[in-house]
Image (cartoon, rainbow, N blue to C red; front, side, top):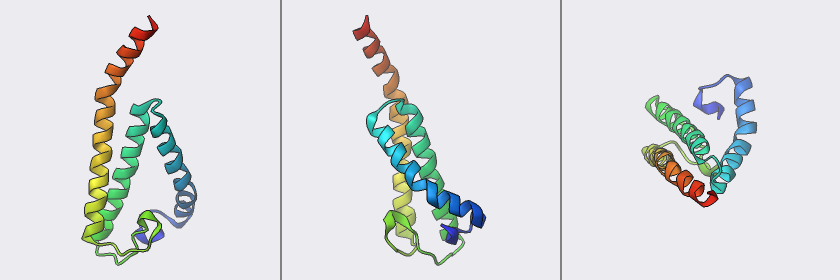
Length: 113
């Protein structure tokens, strides 16, 4: 994470130690489906942050290890395209969460009454 040259060293340590747990927690909350709009939005922001970091580093010509998927791989255009596709899917997930949630709420409300 330090190789991306975005955060100061002290912040890199905090993010590197906490981000995996945050990702797991967000993924579980997303799977549960409770408050889907909130978790989908947060996941989309995380994915867009990753995408920004990859695009910035690629544009700067940094010859770094991507660190994606816990496997060492160089930062290439393939990485940029893959991260862009994942960010786009996250955006779509959030859009669908906002479109679907009002319908689901009214259906659940009908069952209660």
